Length: 115
Image (cartoon, rainbow, N blue to C red; front, side, top):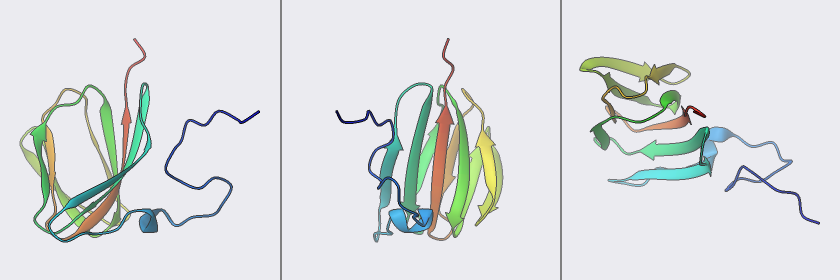
């Protein structure tokens, strides 16, 4: 009988370099979903320079961890530059967006309420 898996699009029982699991593409935002649902979604992204996710709100707290490069993150009108090895949390139901001041890769973890 096969085991049930909750994580997808990644090899199991193998040491992997997170940054290498998503590649840059010119003029694009590339994503790779590793888990999706409630209470959690986990997605890797690679943004080419100048690409963005425009301001929006989400129903969960969103933690961004920069794997490569740097991003301009806007939360409720306040701008932050977040670089490789740094993280920032975008609170639930607050407008936020991201822009690639240079190309960057990030791990996005969104945590939703179970209520």
